[in-house]
Image 1 (cartoon, one colour):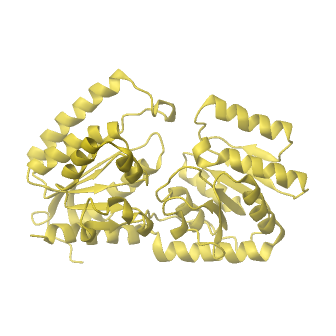
Image 2 (tube, rainbow, N blue to C red; image 1 turned 135 degrees about the vertical axis):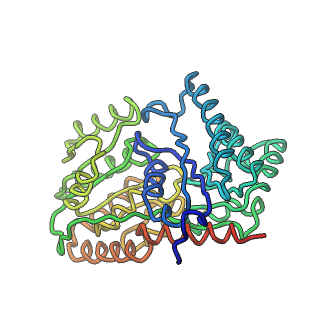
Image 3 (cartoon, one colour; image 1 turned 180 degrees about the horizontal axis):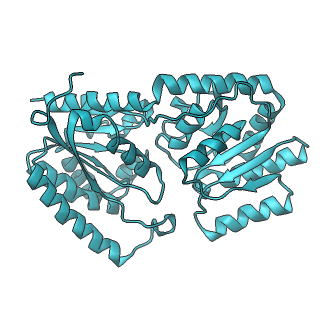
Length: 372
């Protein structure tokens, strides 16, 4: 694609959270802002992060109300000064969250910009369908004002069907450039969990699965990295590890990129088995880049990355026994681990690099801007 001069480049405003805390949407925004999108567009950013830590999510605080008001004022100033051709806005999946997002959409739309909304999860349609008739009409009217909607996988297109025309629903999976030192034949038995430590992400199910492994005398080491969601989850997991004598090691929160790569490099099996809906988790992109066999649940677009029997296994959610069964298979078969891990790296290179993601974004932006 031809690189345009500064004067000819379209002005694009990107809304989105930036870390800390290190959550998927914030990581995605950071990658986009430092990517080749800056070469093709006059890119501006509005940081919408209002939380200082994971513990503050879901908790009402008056100071966030004032911060939201400040964001609306800033949004209005930036939109008026830059007169963007396009605005990209990640939207929430709850009534209160979407209510907070609505002024961003309306301010951008009334400035003359085209608006693309992006969904970084998979719970929006469930919330919409369970809402009352008045809420559904208001949401439908709001989405009629957008020029496109982006989801993280083909399996998530249904979320906007009937609300946004099918030809305006776009799929852009997560992607990043991840270089992990290659270990051609991983011969250890280290199981890695690398995510926020909360029940919805499946940490309790994995630790419970390791109870079965310990009882069956399978040799392994479980390495856990992430931020604890709450004290109750931390207490439950630690008690289970101590009382059942699980071979486990907690290495803390891994915010340093090189340290995270080192953990992935040292691992032999990756497990991410969320109970709740997901989008396209970044942690799976990282595990695939590291050439790891993966055990996961079929949530959101996960099965588009973890292909059952090809680069890992898909197990039912909330089923520690199923996780333990697949772990035992992988722990006992080094050749299978290496074969599935090699396929993970191949699938990553084919589908989930930063270049792949940015090219998809460029295609979507150009498609929206070209519409009359």
